View 1 (cartoon, rainbow, N blue to C red):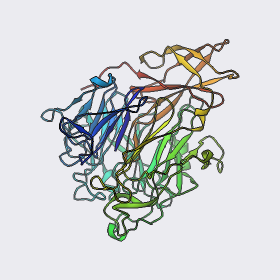
View 2: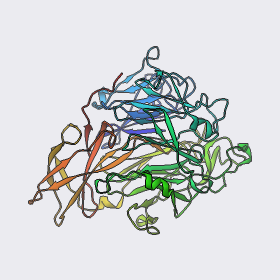
View 3: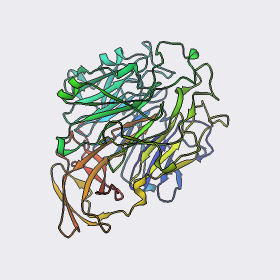
View 4: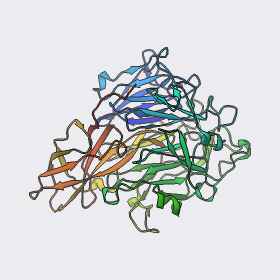
Length: 509
């Protein structure tokens, strides 16, 4: 399923058209809005099948989903959800005669750019276990469309998407502070200069690990910090080393995935140094990597054997291509010394609900983790690894501490500007940090646009006022929705409150 937080109190969940019990306007519902405070759900009524699509917020706060299921040429076949808005006024806007992509894209990825527009990358023209030359869509395009590099509103070719067959669906994409886009698919990685349509190849993922669907790894841009000049570093965990040329019926749901986590600093010195490698406490396929307000990474969901998808391997469990659910989350501290970064205990926190293919997770404004979904099946099923309608909240350790709070966040914050918050701190707190988080759009373990940036701040002597400087530029934090958390020097965050970074205007057309 697809999952995106849409306000401080709501999230939107997009499913595929199948035989769900929930109804809307006399037919099955495949989209709902979840109230994060009451846990009430409200069925929504998109006209098109939003499944297998990608999603990103525009600079004006509008969520755009694009591509997806067959006939998924439209902008979310097409789908635009206007945000922010009260629950009862959230709308779907679909105009297939006028708003559509230039080509069909199943399992594409997307990334928000420094002008608030979205780049939509790759995918295949039809669905299936993996990509192939006959259905590959080795191109990208923009929404709204751009006249750039001689391509006036049409798809732009990418050699990288040809070279990464057959396992390049839902590629990993991250906008970097220098305006390049980091992309990883299959065993390869590159920097894409979207302004000039040039690709710079990076060192391959170490040890032959594949990292994109159906060999799905999780990935995140590590927190950006002013004290190291916002040097970008990526983290990729999990994946698989099985062949992307093999008949999937020869593969096994018991095949071991990778326990590898790879990091690379995306500066000239960092690229020359290459990837650094460490091992998770347990191997995972289909993990979600979530940025937490305290700067750590939560690794959650997925399986300990097999590959992503359903109905393909020779020894399916139910219909699942994977088995042995990973029930317990892992914490990763990127600032700890090597060898001491992982914690797999979390005070015994675990779940008894398998979160396999088609599960997802997101950080919430309150700082909890919302976990939902799992359906490695063609339709609604009750067999092993059944269709899962239950959702859970996982509370990281910091939620047990006394938490700060604040008021006064402007609804709109422009770049490199100062603003002041009124703050209430627990007794004994002597200092705070401020983080701005893009909660992104999550699907199939890929978290489009997720990022965390530390903001420069100054606490008044009476500890009641906090003066903050916004992100330095639109490549450090692309214009669009953001949640601001104040974090004590003990690592305990406030609840996050929503703002819009930039000028709040629509992207250029």
